[in-house]
Image 1 (cartoon, rainbow, N blue to C red):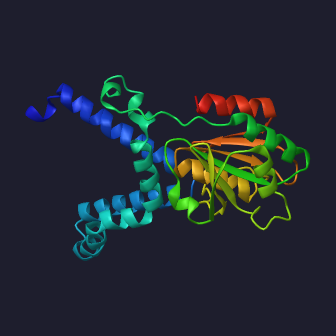
Image 2 (cartoon, rainbow, N blue to C red):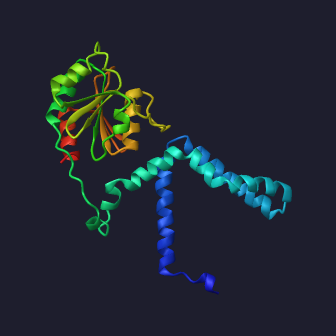
Image 3 (cartoon, helix red, strand yellow):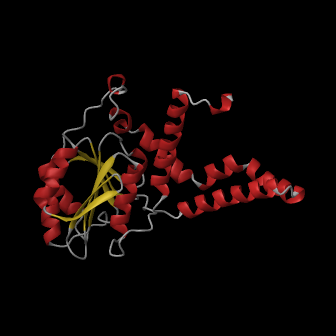
Length: 255
């Protein structure tokens, strides 16, 4: 009866698998990918039923699809797998565990001119100027910066206001700030595929959610319709915050 023996390593194995499944499900639960995932599971269950009923021809046909299942899963879930690997690679994933802490080199967060950013957002909020700012934490966002215009300038309130001025040809798109410097403007960002987002969130807000899902960064949006300021991190957001709250959040995330 060895198959009934449960060792402590088996418990660890089960817990690790459960953790991986939970983290992957958390990434796809609010997107269209969850329907694909359910479809794949249903297809696999159907194959098991067909095998149990000994339907040879149908079992062989379905088995051919199951045989290339790993490749199909990688193709279908490439975005979700990428996000999962980014999550695992994120320093906070392992630093939260005491055991791994001493073995991980901690990169110091760059000092950020939070006052300049808050001041610029305050003025642009009053004039209802549309704004999308992405501030990198521990990733340089070079891929996204290269989709826009590289300027590599010091962060300043006046410069930010001029860039986002509605008649400026560079106002559209995102501004990327890395290591307290405005690296690029008019950048293109990935849009979140979450299905449960409020209908009043526009393209800027969805792009802000998307970039914080894909990278270790925070995003700030000033609505062109309402002038409300929103703050985004790890795919979550705080809507309609004050300038004081914005500066407090920036200081907390970059200290």
